[in-house]
Amino acid sequence: MTERIRELIEKLAEAHSLALSEYQELVEAQCPEAANLLAEKAIAVRRAIYGNAVYVRGLIEISNICRNDCLYCGIRRSNAHCERYRLSEEEILACGEEGYRLGFRTFVLQGGEDPFFTDQVLCRIVTALKTAHPDCAVTLSMGERSRESYQKLREAGADRYLLRHETADQEHYGKLHPAEMRFENRMRCLRDLRELGYQVGCGFMVGSPGQTSHTLAEDLKFIQEFKPDMCGIGPFVPHKDTPFREHSAGTLEQTCYLLSIIRLIHPPVLLPATTALGTIHPEGRELGILAGANVVMPNLSPVSVRKKYELYDNKICTGEESAQCKDCLSARVASVGYEIVTDRGDIKK
Ligand code: SAH
Image (cartoon, rainbow, N blue to C red; front, side):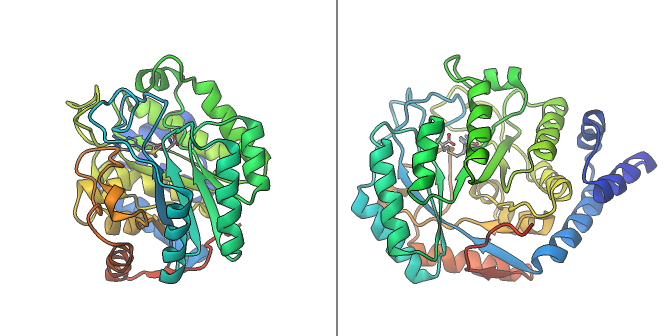
């Protein structure tokens, strides 16, 4: 590591911001020594805010039916090999019951952009979940919708929304998505969600096709400016039935490096150690926590559908019951000296 890079890391840890070109330099200078210094500083700022707490979110994958055709995604509409499913309202609420019993106080409903989930249907589900469990937070991750739709869902009780920006570079966005999906619309959604009072999550894949140190610098600058409440970062992992099947996966090292940088850019951010990170390395999630992540998202979906929500090849945790998933993650978190906390886990500002 050069003296210059050490200075940039010191500056980032103090000012929580760098110039676009400096972010690019930092990304390009990735090496074990720089990674260790970043992680050390990331862990220190996180400890000051959150102690050794790691928050859990129960993930319910409600549908793999999707009208979109994102080139990287295994449940894209043109994947004819994908066996489609949709959970019923009763099944979703039953996942909530089970999750509540296991101690979860945040539920994340995630799915493809399935037209079945109209505002009316989704609002009913959100309200039912909030009525049954008023002490829980409901997070939605259901893709791009109109401002009116986000507003109705917020009024129905949704607290948080996850919508990864995927890349802050418009041209790169165009390489990852079909022409009918617009970068401007993704950004409009994020702005609307913020204005409507949601806690908002953005994020991107590490190592997605066409990603460069420059596009990553743009992602970091965007995160610095937007200051999301949550930020989902995981490696890109190819799926065999997509146009990116031959592309290699993102790396553990780069993902951890970026997790540390993001923690330093926005110290209170809720940062998951993702399932994708656990998929590319057996201890990926533990290493993510040691780099600055402070959220894990065990799967609460019925075991019968887990294999079908296959965004990428070899996704882990598709065979276990929810209780096993939670116990396994608690043990993993404990193994690196952290403690699972089961309150709502709102951002500390
Ligand atoms: N339809 C929702 C949920 C998408 S799935 C939405 O649009 O937000 C959640 C995230 O999984 C996506 O935002 C994407 O970043 C990630 N993902 C999709 N395919 C992936 C792949 N092949 N490798 C790694 N992550 C992937």
